[in-house]
Image 1 (cartoon, rainbow, N blue to C red):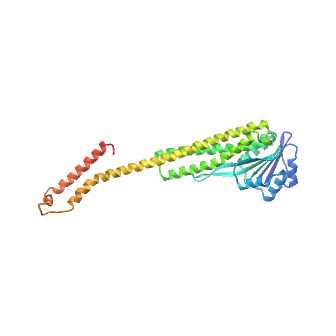
Image 2 (cartoon, rainbow, N blue to C red; image 1 turned 90 degrees about the vertical axis):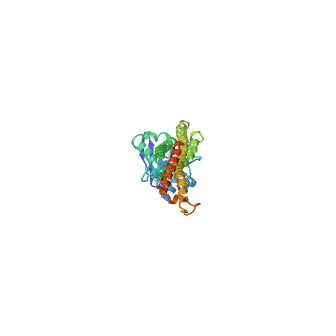
Image 3 (cartoon, one colour; image 1 turned 45 degrees about the vertical axis):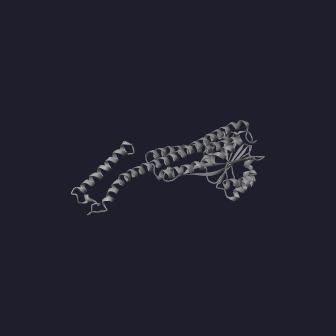
Length: 330
């Protein structure tokens, strides 16, 4: 699907974009032209590439989902950026980062956005131009490209904010009731952070090309807006690294808590085994049942022998328990 807007004399009007001639007319129209293409067929993509002199490698990069980047050509600039959102699951922790490439091609008075599916960030800018502020498109194509980039980058904030809340919830859960499910949640969060990191880092480097004045198709008056996007991406990178440290720290806390719990269990088992050890020795000795001779067990025939042994074993166990408590082992 290909849609076209042309800004002229303070208003935006839709333009026919069904065939090659219509696209060429839109490109040379008096004013700024925005071509919004999504879910295009091969034939539509060929017409679009021919009308705006887009290189086949550029469109292939969008379709093959390579990393974010910027390439500069004599008549236009090509920006490949990725949208990101959490793919829904039954719970927040079961979500994963899903990304989609967005290709931005812009010259002096035209911009082309190419996506596989309809993208909310691109749609929000399109709707704002058509319904509220048509003059946004009149500020040249580089400014419109900035608005699209800014809308996409702003979506990263909501993702990182949600991940931050998830990390706080996991930390509380680790303290209250650590279990194997907690470790699975932590690993899921770490995968999400790794996924968003793979998007944010190269995007920051790509936008820096537009922000520092290397692109001839970005006016000096627009560079400050790209620098603002770059600053946002720097914040994103810092948040990602901070959250990765928090997730790693939470994982260490979980392992330490689990190890401490295991040590407590082992300590109690050791105390029980230590108490039972002398009792087992006594039972083993009297289990030999040697009697009838001067060197055997004369107490086997004693009337109070059995109660005496039980009392002795109880006293021994009580004395050992008291000793362990005095040493702080229980």
